[in-house]
Amino acid sequence: MNGVAFVGLAIPTAVVYGVQPGVAASSDELVAFYGGSATRVLLAAVFAGLNTLNLVWFVAALRTTLADIGQDGWSSAATAAGAAIAVPLFLAIIIVPPSRTRSPARPTTP
Image (tube, rainbow, N blue to C red; front, side, top):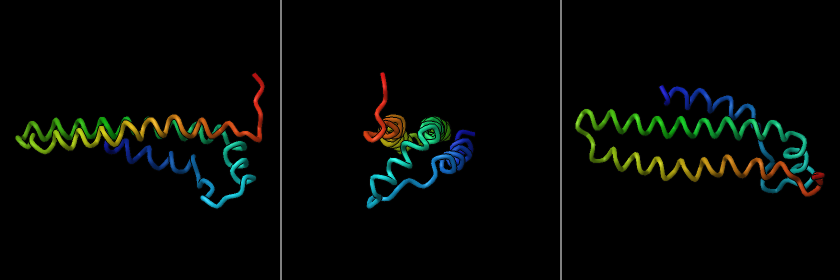
């Protein structure tokens, strides 16, 4: 079920986040994307964080299922690899987009 939830949440996450400016984007484009749509970026970060948790739960359920049928040797490695990929991805998704919504061109008042 978590695999289905992962795919089901990946689509709304991509739709909400949209297309971010490219590497050669001007500063005006960056300010317009991250400053003008801060709520959208933050909402996409929440969806992506939940989606990463679904991925971790799916990998754990897969490992348990494989252990039940006697294929425990490589499933432990797959679980460890999934966690090693998901945890930094989760942290990057949760930390990076919200920090980008604070633009130096748009000062905030305390």
